[in-house]
Each structure stands twice: as C-alpha cells, then as structure tokens.
Length: 257
Length: 367
Image 1: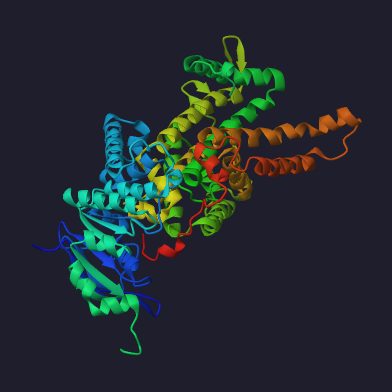
Image 2 (image 1 turned 180 degrees about the vertical axis):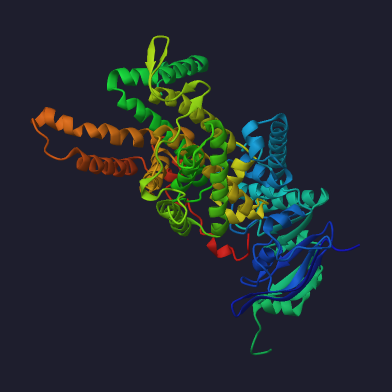
C-alpha cells in the first residue's frame, strides 16, 4: 500500500540558510506520526512547506500519490490535508462556530448569487455547514461555546477550536503543530484521547510535539529533525535509544566524544 | 435603548416606512426644497459607503481609490444617455452595464494588488483612483471621449415610462419636483443595497471575507482561495460604486472629473470608520452624518449674523474647520465608531490591544 504522505528530498532555503536539507519521510494511512527535534530544527518549516505556505527549494511532496509541493494552500486543503498552528491563528473576532464554518468553506459551494438570493439550496447548505460545525465543536469538547468569540476562549479551548476548524475541511491527514503546548497534564491526557479518537475515525495524524512522553505514548512512528536534517526515524523506543538523537537533545560531550 | 422605547418589530417597521416615505415632504416643508437634494445625496452616499464597506469593513482591504468606480459608473451613464455621443439608452439598461463595468475595473485593480496589504494597498489604490480621474480629465483628444475638464452636460434624467424625472409633476395634489422623484428611486436602490450587504455579510462568502480580514495566512491554510475571495470583494464593492455613479450622473445631469477626486474617496472612508467599520447601521449613520453635517454648517453665516449682527468669519472657511474638528472629536471619544459592531467594540476595549497579528513573516508562497 502506498503511503498517504511521501516527502522526498525536500530542501528549503531562506537566502543562504538551509532550513531543511533533503528531508525524506513517509506517513502511512492511519498512523500517528510524530515529528520531534530541538527548537529551530525545521519542524514548522517542514509543515509550512507541506501545506503550501512555503514553496520548496527542491524535492517533492506527494499526498495520496499526487504532488502537492508548491501548490496553493487551498488546493492542498482540498486534497485532504489540514493543519493547525503552533502560535494559535484563529479568527479572533469571529465566533467559535463561525471559525469552524470557515473550515467548511472548501467543502461548500454557495457564491455571491446564492448569498444575495438565499435560494433553498444555499439555505440548505448553510444549515448543513452549521450543523456539521456544531457536531465538530462537540467532538473536540467545545459544546455550548459556539457563540463565544474565538479570541475570548480559554487557551486550551482555542487549541481545540483550531482542531475543530481543521477537521471541518474534511482532511485525510491532519498536521498538528504543538497541539498540547502550554497545557497541564490533565488537559494533555484529554488531548491524547482526542487524537486517538481521530485516528480511530480514519484520520492520519502528523504531530509536532515537544512533550516526549506524549509522543512516545501516542505515536506509531517518529522522525527526528536536527538542523534541518532528519537524523532518525522509527518506532518510539528505537528512536529514544538512538545515539544521534541523544546527542542532538543533550549535546555532544566534547571531553569524551 | 430604554425599554419603553422598544416597539414590537411590525410597529417599528411600519413607523420607519412611513417616516421614510414622508421624509422629503417633511424636509421640504420645514427646511426648504434644497434639503430634499441633500436627502438624495445622503442616500447616494449610503450606497457608496455600504459598497466600500464590503472591501474595507468585511474583507479588511484598505481602498483609497473607491471613487474611481463611482466615476466609471457615472461616465458610462453619461456616454450612453446624453448628446455627447447622441445615445439615449434607458436608465434601467445603463445602470447594470455601469455596475458590471465598475465590477470589472474592481477586478482590474484587485489583480495586481493581491499581495499587498495595509498601507501599501492603500497607496496603490489611491494611485488607481487618481489615474482614473486624470484619464477622465485628459481623454478629450485625439478622440473626445470624456470632454476633458468641461465634463459631460445634458445627461438624460431617469425616465420610468411616461414619468420623466424632470420639471414638476403633480400627484394627489402634491407638487413633486425631480429631487422628490429621485429620492424614492434612490431609496429603493439604497434599501436593496442594505439587504444585499446584510445577506453578503452573513453568508459563506462573507465568512471567507471576515477570515481574510482576521488572518490571511490562516484563511488560506483553512482552504479559502484568498485570491478569488479578494477579487470578489473588490468586484462587489466596485459594483455598488458603479451603480451609485450612474444614479449620480442622471440626478446631476452633469459630470466632470472634479466630482471624483481623492477627497471623495476619503470622505466615504471616513463615513465607514466614523460610523463603525463592518457594521451596517453604523455605516449608514456615518454616511448620513457626514453628508448632513457639512450642509448644516452652511448656516454658520446666518447664525453669526443673528448673534453678532454681521458675518465675522466666512462660513465656507469655518465650515470645514468645524467639520474637521467634529471628526477629530468623534474619533477621540468613539474610536470604534458611532455604532460599532459587537466584535469591534470588544476589539477596541481589549486592554492588551492585540488586534493585529504580525503575519507577514509567514508568507513567501504565492497564495
């Protein structure tokens, strides 16, 4: 079976600086795949390349066998690849429900004429969007908060809302950029549960996370980035034992090295 | 609003309808017929402000060249219904054409500015507005398209069947002059504009505009085709501008490039900002106030004569001074606008003031 996401030799340069150097990895359908590495290793850059916010300097990215590198973000979303942001980027002055409904934009069709005429088809579509958005809010644990402005939600709820909004795009692959950052242990457990439920519902997860315990307990496979290179990949245990990984995180001891 | 002032919706609606219908007669009887013309302009500016509000208020794209679309609608009307080319098409045929042409120019302006935002977009749109005006000023040779600075005269008034919006008409014993007739025509167009603006705001496209305004990167990453949605905002805003332009040309009977200068664009933007950006009742109030206030201040000369016996300061000088002062005071005391939307009020009330996110850093792809 072909992998859902295949990243081959992806390089990203900012001027003379290579943020990613020939990164190759692949994510299989139904996996929870972790991406870890020290600060500045290029994890978020890789996310941005995969979701069309950055162009890639070299290499290719295939989603379900179709190239998505250097495509526009909305085209990649249409193919079934959604994401969240490390520094939460909600539409702060829209209600929580409206935020999720924007996620449904790509899966709905009403245009200007529909908006002006409010014909039955537009109204039906609008009702469907609204219903689906509330279902997703409930799924991520935000029941009853639909009318709150997104910017007024508690921090953890904002992270959940970002996930609901991404789910509204009906993704096959959901990329989460540090989704539990700043959460307490109880919240982290809830989020782990949520990720498992997502996986069970058939969505493949790609996870950037600093919480090693969470990554090790949750992910089927893990890739480690350091200075824009992939230095290890494999099951959580084998990666944890990997010498290069330990060095990347703890530094090389010059005296004995 | 105090509770005793709240009326059941049907009653309030009926009262509003009666007021709007009787307004020109009440105004004409109390303030004089020149004020009926002011009412007409109020309605035109409400339309213009609601149109610009789509671009600025809904989609968050700062457009300082909006008057260009007004000019395009007006000139198209003049070309197709005046002795200038000897064409005399009916108004209901020209207005949609003017709206379409202006919408097309909206896309034309939008296309090269897709990657610009904030101040940069404002500068480019400002340039666009000036280019159109200067074109109109100079296109009298080699082929006389616009008649240059003299403008185009003797534009046909609106005609609804046998009813020509010119001279005096009598209806149920009332004398109706052209400004009265135009009032009702403009009122119909304004009401339609309000309904359309409301429906657009509360729709799939309206949400995409709001998402674009809030965070363009996130909007793109959530599947909004930011290019199309921006062009759509420019086109929709321009369409209303073109429509208002056509109405303006028929109402005035004369247009020249002078009517479409930068001041007009800024005035319309002021209406939106003052009233409450993105919020329809606010925008309407802003348009009403900024049209009525300068007219009311024309009486400054009379007031001076009444109070002091003679005119001390030329009312025309004083008028703009006070107008400017009023703008400054309103912005100081109501920074979110006179009737801000719920969201904007909160945005301004937020103590940390983090309304704007820095987002330019995350954007090197062509969206």
